Length: 398
Image 1 (spheres, rainbow, N blue to C red):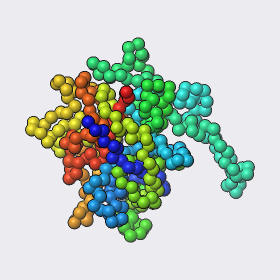
Image 2: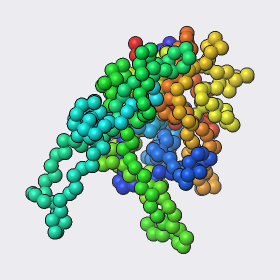
Image 3: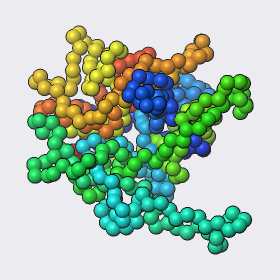
């Protein structure tokens, strides 16, 4: 079998110029009962696909929209871009990595040092509000350490009875899962002491906000005030998405009224292309949410409904894959209104969360993600494969 090249041509970074919108269409979930209905961040790849598609039409390349392929979300540190323009994005950490919070006086590697959660010293202000001294900001030696709030202490392994710790290892008390790891560390998961796990680089900032007129930043009228669930990213952090098409760099509106981002195009890292060309045998993990099943039922693995009866392509000898996952998350997006001019919400789906790990039954070998069958993905006008759902990377490399 010929391994296809990666279909992605660039990695798009979106640096927010202010707050971003942290909500999506209402969807029945447990958060509705706690007053957090609609909370959803970072935006899924359809949000980026809409931005790229609109720009392709503006550039006279509307015929290419049908071939558009996006995937994400990820994020990156803009300070980490080297002189060659190479980036090292952060991906959802596999759920088989058990972590613990870094204690006081300890960094992510378990060494003594400044705590990543320690508060920075307060600013010393003079009467005129300026900093004391010559106005030069001193370097903070603990700045990068504060970005690392967890370290990996154990790793679950697949077995006949499911995912568990290797024999002889003890389960850490109240282990944490999730977070983000760098792409450059994905291939080093056998060395747990080398893995640095970062927490989310954003925080919610709910605030009262008036609905604005479409032509200008003025209140739309009476009773236009509402509570907006805004999101503030840490300075130096940017959202990132893979895309098959490049567009002009610049400032774009992204997600909500007047929310702007600075868009830049970067070369797809070689490590990403290398991982996406590896066949999947044994265990692998999802780095983006996975939407599978029929139009009326969401599933935890692909269901090929193009055949009658429908087939489970990841089953072998009446055995299915072993799953290590979390509770499903809502997944939906806005659709252009066409001739009506009014945007609509897509069908609400449940998605398998990013970080989910699969162990294939013995004897089954899957092609790399770019060669997966389109019939594995649901269709809603177009295949959800074009939104880069279920992007899978191997956990064990040959």
